[in-house]
Image 1 (cartoon, rainbow, N blue to C red):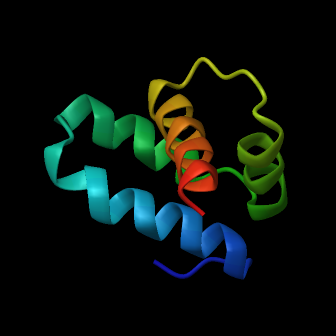
Image 2 (cartoon, helix red, strand yellow; image 1 turned 120 degrees about the horizontal axis):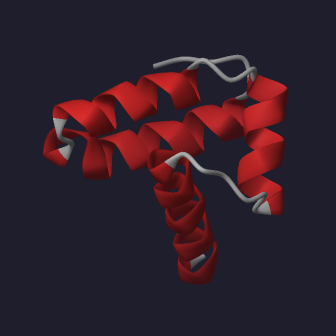
Length: 71
């Protein structure tokens, strides 16, 4: 999936490659809600680790944090 921000494309794309095939239907619904967030806002939420009630968004934030440790 291509979005408007290269860095966000990388985060979301890598997360999806590693997790989406294991999602339940309800997790896919929550994932769609995440994708509806404006790129700039979503990137800010992920990189500043804002709190969220969306469980998938929290998984994306954790995935992002783990990717920083690997680099």
